[in-house]
Length: 379
Image 1 (spheres, rainbow, N blue to C red):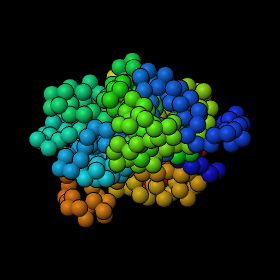
Image 2 (cartoon, one colour):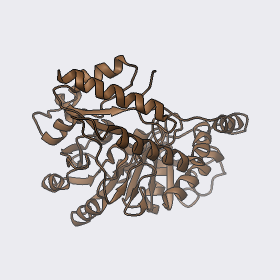
Image 3 (cartoon, rainbow, N blue to C red):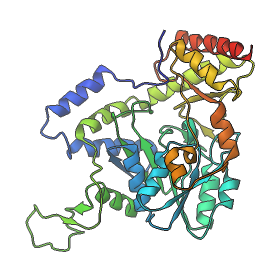
């Protein structure tokens, strides 16, 4: 048996939707973009959604919309994919890494409070593995210090926090549509917001900083072809081909989420008896999107367990190295043990296969081989 740690779920209906768009007059900058954005905003109960060519592009654009720039600091957890920090560097800002709370693997808000300075511009909680951060505390901290709250929800589309969907409780929330995420557009991302100001900025920023909106033009005497560049933006546009897939996937998102939840419940049942295994955290405040199922083992045997499972065809993975331990970040001057709980978590973490269509038989195989691998590593 061969299993990836995750994979996309593409059906014939998705393929038909993409083919229809390929045969249509528009394969980019067409009607599927607005259709996808409308579906996404409705699902998140947000006023606005803007889609981008990738999750990283979406995050970069959100940081730009927040006014982040040279000399600013952006607070974020060290346990995240590098893009969360890279997007700050693109704008000349400094990522400030915060430790995680062991009970949730999300940002430790006590540590976050300690790291706020007069240069802090934004706070960026990351919903690790699909479990929402404590957004009430994040929002209060942002309000107290007049910071922009940008939620990195790359892993949490479809998660619920205090009865509300992720995407409405921060100033901006970013999502990713990479193949292993809740839904996919191949590559792609989005920002949802309730702010008209941020929405207008994001629309312009993703299209080279240009606009054709008559209300924004400085010269309204020209013909309909006239457009003006009002800022230095990027070409971060999603194509209609991608958006067509997104529209089709959004019709099935609740089914995808239900299957992920069912798979997570099966794992809890199959793995609860295994000695030396710590199961993922759960929260009374939130319902995870179950992007990942991250178990923990003793750090002295983690790599051995990893290799044993890989040899059995089980595509385990590690999410993530603390960002500041990457060679590039070391070259910027990040040194030492800045976030000890993050380092301890990272050294013991193991993501096991989880995706909507994983079967009970496949999960049983993972559980059996994981127990064998742990026993082998201990003796």
